[in-house]
Image (cartoon, rainbow, N blue to C red; front, side, top):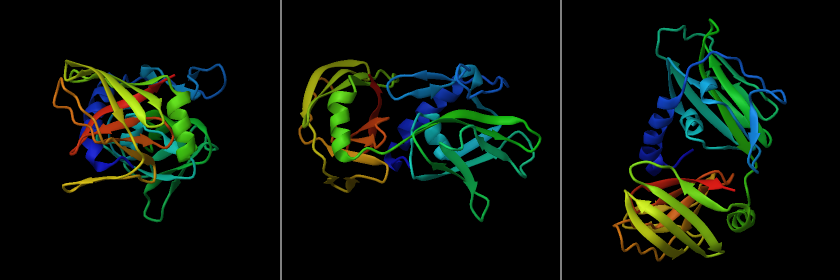
Length: 263
């Protein structure tokens, strides 16, 4: 699950994404040649906006992460929380994965729904009420987690650069030049920052009550020497999802930006 200190930045991004979603009831096919398309070297399945649905439903837990593009990991379980908000029947909801061989759905003894990552691939998750009305539909990406050695090779050789989400004047690009050297370029809150060169090392950050370290689903790299002369941006490290799907650069108090790979 996403580190709590990153929740504010992901919540604001979720609002932007949901605001763009259409609510068509068009069906989804996972057969080759259908409206589900393959793209990028991570063989990512995508849905057109018109077929992504989030309506009459309040979501929590891993559904929030799915909405902002976080990948599931093979062998991991993820609780998905939701409730219907439009008066739909709440008994016996239907939660289905179009590819249960990739991501399966199960319930615990209390009736809570979970996703289980089974193998690399993508699936379409759909939530309906007992009347068959579709409240939620989105793609779930599942990948095997990279070892630390694999992650280092991926940073240097698998990705051209990392592009930040564009919001509040942030437009940044992150380049990994060597196994301990990286460069950040672009704008911070609308102000050009030029090229900021910095070192990164795989070790925890612990200072003045703030502690960052590896989690079950992310690696953490400390930045010991970040100096931005153009703004007050002060990065102390970054988290990267073990699927290689997303980077969150961190200040001493909160995430500063979210990055996704450009191949």
